[in-house]
Length: 456
Image (cartoon, rainbow, N blue to C red):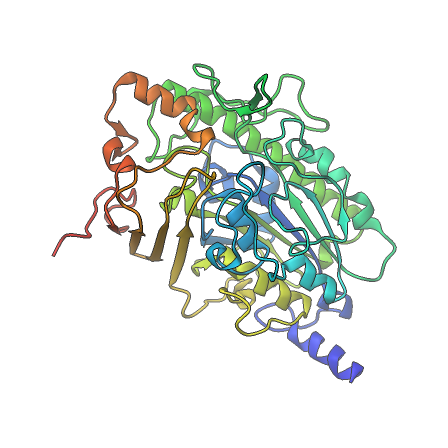
């Protein structure tokens, strides 16, 4: 029976477009899952931004597969992370909003998360950086390298090179078992200040939010600063001095996290583990500006996804299958040779497409949002194909609520103070007050402005 199990694991990890000559060690690869915080496709060189400097992530894409149609299922921190680590939509696993502080959302105790399943399959599991999900039993890691408190200005997750160095013991351990490392940086989330009453605030107007950048710098990081006049303003944002100044800070935070990824890859190579490690890079949701984060619009939902797999045959591949974060857990479990029980997940494995091979039938994705902060109830559901997106606002009589970091953003405050009636390409009134149904033809209206729901 043991010989049969080994044989099945070997043949199960040898197909799907990856090299069939993989060794027994590579058949159960190490897994490194890197999760950024509020990083969109707008700020990555390998996704077409010629200004931002992300050499390490670009190199990872050149050595792996870059997904062009990858989506979170909800553009909110804790709910999205719960989907990443469970393979279930957040309205199924119970994480309807943020986990920390008075918000106190958490998944159902019956959820068995990815680290628990991988531990059962014989993996060593470790996490470092932002956690932001609960209960601990559902997402338990054997080794916790940092606490991962949310919105903590002193978080190790703001120092990604230092954070990578903290993982050395996991990577170099003399242990025959493969490891699963969950590497969750806080960058490029907006930075906050702490008020005398202990409450966080993101209000820095008229100065731009620092996005975690600081004059003292961070250990091992060479700051990359950007000229606001040269940043690229996405169409959904206003081209204003306030917005450009904030994008420059955001870019700097992205370049910092890129250096952390570079250091982590360096450690894997020095330990001789790089060639037997599956590396996945993605973000929990889009950039922290109104119109992206906490919405079901593409700037909040369509995200970077870079996967570098052992045994790859076509490095630098591009995959256009429509995948979501609900597909991650089944994919990683299949790579690990672990059980993928039917019915346990809302997603499915995309392992067969990791060398760019076409994936038939991956032509639609679904979104679900309920809350962000505890006071931000605004339930929405969506389905998106390559051409169309339909959003169902389940409580259209409500005014769309703002997260604290968005309503206090100098970009938004500056637009309101100017008296403008349009934010980016969307009328502000249309953004704040939404009908029950929104239908967009993304081919002719990629900015999701012209609602076709009532058009015969």
